[in-house]
Image 1: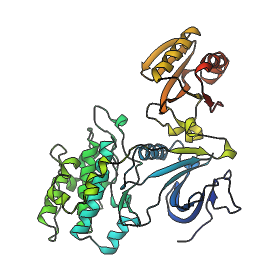
Image 2 (image 1 turned 180 degrees about the horizontal axis):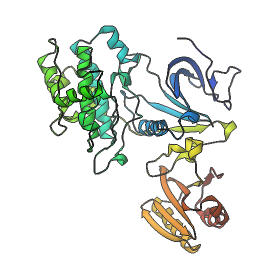
Image 3 (image 1 turned 90 degrees about the horizontal axis):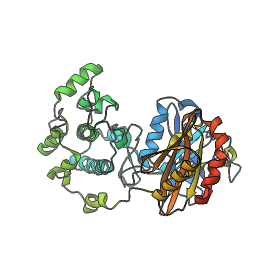
Image 4 (image 1 turned 90 degrees about the vertical axis):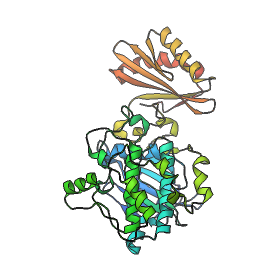
Length: 432
């Protein structure tokens, strides 16, 4: 592949005169891949010389499209997960027009290309990749994440040949459940469970298990179990479980695939149960078997903005009960908000103090949940949320919840801010 001139934002600063240094932190290298809205480059950290991958997203092309929530979702999910078989996200940076996701570099590329070269894997090789996929997936499920778009194209390899699950743009979090089920049809048709395309709700973990069955079949056969140019015909085959095992499949592998490709999600084997099957556990190294219980799930995700376009720290983006409202990275979606850090002894004490201030200033006060307080006055409503961002360090966000918004609030903000001062450690992103 050639090394094109990298499209960095005009605000990007550099420690050298070269245009391929991104925001003074990463030297971009060759193009690894491209899509309609993003390009992925190999990059090197100027701080420690490590190799990374940087996804460069053109925000102007995805704001207010279906791709915007996918990007936000991908970052929100990946920041929750640290596992040796899941691509790790290190940092998110943004300018007015670009967004940069700095991620682990899977030097081995797509697993799909390895299948294409070898036609198919031997059973021991297929089982080894499958084990790593299932361990990663079980870890996702333990942390409330269903992937929903599992396919060989989203499975990468590191330089040691270890599998890495990527592309969490269609994944689902617990807050997306309705009555304990998911309702959005998504994924790649040939790998999608039959219940996902129906009109009823479905269990995302069981849908992932179906996809694992298709992937294992592809590993061992080199082709799909269900495949037809007519999508309706293919779905009929999927619902009827209309496929044939190649003669070289072992009896044990056939049993595993048959249990995973069960059209009925209630009787389909779960990922957790699969991990107890003898075929799956064969040759599984003890360190891999136990890794799910040894991995820290949460890590610090640094989010910064180019200084030339205005500073945006992680504090500027933290909001809402999910922990990070990444929609703030998209300029068109930003709303009025004031934020400050506080070192009062607890979130409850901060909420009590906010309630006292609101009552004193004539607001109608409503405790909506433990860490959210609503303040209402005249034609305006405010939401104040308290988040613990570190031990004994809290972020408090004040934002417009309803009403006439910014104009009215600016008139009253002065007195409200003055009353809150006694609990403030530092103000953040004070501008609209």
